View 1: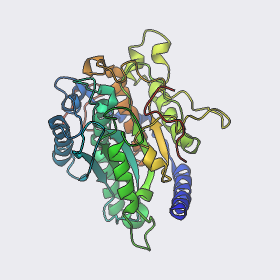
View 2: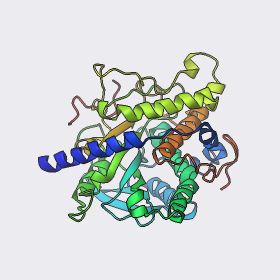
View 3: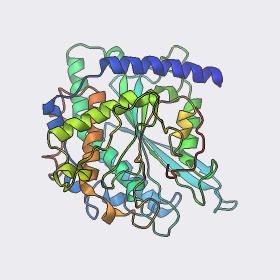
Length: 395
C-alpha cells in the first residue's frame, strides 16, 4: 500500500508539473463566450437545477429521480459522454440490519482513440444526496446547485471539445499520443451522515468508489497503474450558492490550481461578467470568491480540517482542489437551504467560473465559440490523513 501510494505521488507530481508548464490562459474573447445558465437555473422550471431541488436521501424515490435526471441529461443532451453507475450498500445507524443502496455516477468524455490506463482526467465532483434530517431538507447549496453547475459546465464545453479533437485529427495528429487528458464527473451518493458525522457514518459513496478505483488495475505497460491514479486533479464543489462566499486555499500542493481559478475570477470581474458584482450595493457584495491567491507557504493551510468526499481520495494520494466556503453559508444544514434562499446571481457566476477553469485546463481557447450552446450570459438556453475532522463542521 505504501509503495503504491509513493508511485502514485510521483506520477502525479510529474503530471502536475507538465500541466503547470503547458497551462495557457483563455483569451478575453473566450472568456466572453462562456455562457451563463440563464433560465435553466430557474428554481421552479429550470431544466438543470429544478429537478435536483427535492429531498434525495439515499435509497429513497427522490434519490432515484435525481439519478435519472443526470442520466437522461447526458444520454439525450450530451450523448458523447459515457455514463456508468457504481453501486454499493451499507448499514447505517438508522437502518438497523437493512442495507442502504448507494449509487455513484461516473461520467466521462475522453479523446477519440484514448485507451484506459494511458490518459488522465480532470475530475469535477459534487455529492447529490441530501440529509435525512430535518424532515424535507433540500440542500440547495449542499449540493444541488454544485451538481447543476457541473452539468452546465459539461454542456458549455462539449462542442468545443469535439471541435478541438476533430481539428487535431484533421491536422494529422495521433490523439493516442498527442492529447491524453479527458474529463470525468463524479456525482457521489451518501456524503451526508444519517445520524451524526463519524468515519463510518458519512461519505459512503466516496469511500466505496475510491477503494474500487484503487483496485481497478491497468496493464503493466500503461502510463497509469489504476483508475485512481488517472485523476489529474480532484475538484470538489460543496456548499456553493449563497451570497458573498469566501473560499480559502486549503492545500499547499494544489495552491497553483487555486491561483489559476482565482486569476480567472479576477478577469471575469474586470470584464464586468459577474452578475453578483453587477448587482452589488456594497464592497462586501463584490469581494472575490477566492481571496487567497497570494497566500504564503508559511500561512495556515486548512486542508484536512473539513470532512468531505475528498477524504478517501486524498488518503490515497490524489491531489484535491476543495471549493467550499469558510465560514459555511448561514443556511447550512437547516430548512432554509432551499431554492428560495439561493443567490442565483452567485450560482450563475460560479457556473461560469467553473466552466472557464475547465476550458482553460482543457486548452479550448480556440474552440469556445463552437462550444457555446447558450445565447448570452443570463439568456435562455437552447439546447496525508486528516486530523480533528468533524464532518463539514465550521472551522
